[in-house]
Image 1 (cartoon, rainbow, N blue to C red):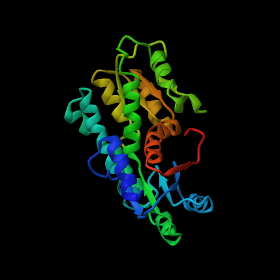
Image 2: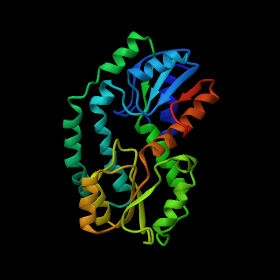
Image 3: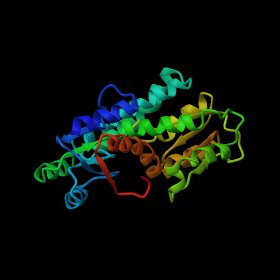
Image 4: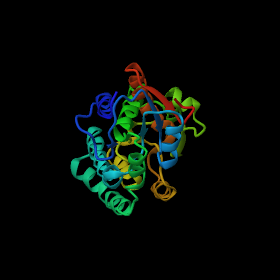
Length: 269
C-alpha cells in the first residue's frame, strides 16, 4: 500500500469524503508492507519504526504540520452532533465558541515541524489519522447501545459499552463522573470524534436540550466541577486510550487484509 491508500481506507471506514483538518499525509511513501501505529508519534517512535524494519508510521494524534496547527477546526463537528440529537442550531453554535477560541490560541505556538522534518530525514513515510478513526469508534459505540432506551440505567449503559474488547482490556475503566449509575439514562448522546471533548459549555447545552446522559472520552477537572455545581444530567467518561484504539483497530484490520502488517505500541490491538 501507499500513504494515500492508507488514508483513503480510513476515510472510507469513517464515511468521510475528504481529509479532515486534524489528519494529514506528512511524508508520502509507497510499498508499505509493515507500519508502526501509535497514539502519539514523535522522533522516538520514528526511530523505533526504523529499528523494527517498518516502511511507514501511522500516528493517531496529529504528529505535526497543518494537522497539528489547524486540527482544532474539527471541533466544529460538535455542532452537527448536537443538532443530530435535537439541539437547536443557534444553541449548538454558541456552545462551541469559547473552547474553539481557546483551542486556536493553544495550538498556535505548537512545534508543528519537528516530527515531520525528522521523518523526512529518516525517509520514513508518516501519516496522522485522527477524527476518521474517532468516528469509526463512535459508530461502533452507537451500534453497541442502539437497543438501549431511555429507561435503561446508566450502569447498564456502562456495562454495554464495557463489553467491547478495547474497554475490557483497558486499565482505565469507564467512570460515571456526573449523576449516578442508578439513574435512568434518558436520551443518550455519544460526544466523540470532534477533535476533543466539548467541555462544560457543550455538556450543559446537551442537558438543557433534552439529553439525559452524555459520554466524553475525557474531561478536565475544572469543567467537571462546573457540571457538578449545576447538578443536572449524567456524564460517563469512557477513557481516552481505549476509545482511541477502538477506532484504530478496524483500520488496522483493513490494512492487514490488503497485505500491510500493523505493529502497534499497545496491548489494546
